[in-house]
Length: 294
Image: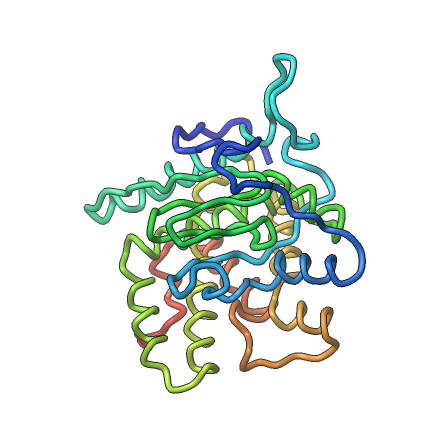
């Protein structure tokens, strides 16, 4: 993936190094219970109420690659050297702006891109306070994607796997939630969840929302293929990531059995299927995971 060919975005806010984080900063991840809790936080799409106190905050589930964006370890800019992670994130976000801007324009609409805030350790958002353990998330209240700069490296140390396109899939998934917010889909889902008769029914709406964000990530991938020279190997990175972060795979790994009624993001097969549907079609109209249920 030639991500260096993509346009940079001016909507990245760098809140690292104590700029914009909560007092005390980082989250320690070690052995035993602390490690398990941290990994569950990264992997399992934390329940909305645990972050926002009731407001809707959408998180991705992901697994990073063995190499960092641009084949380097993420670091602050030092000695005049370019911050590879900042450049990578800026270009992927810029590409999503280009792709979704074109899609909205064809529909006679104007795309308003989200801000993407990089942070270290913890952050204050309009959806409440969040620590690194939450993982990347989108806050509809301030239309920002939040990403801890240690995310990819931390997940690489704990789980491994991935690649540049897998990282891009994570960002594009969160931007997909922003698209849902702009289109009013998120509000419809929130209303449907409030009127749901059971937790299992509410979770099903969450699954449909997350799978649509996966599909929207695929739509972005389709639109960025030519500029970024995305290959089948790159696509396989996203497929492998989506497979690893399905609810069924994560529950089997974490507790040895699966509870379908508790799924909030979809099975591995569903996540791969919807991502590929968006990627192959490049058409967001093919991403109707709700099938008239809203």
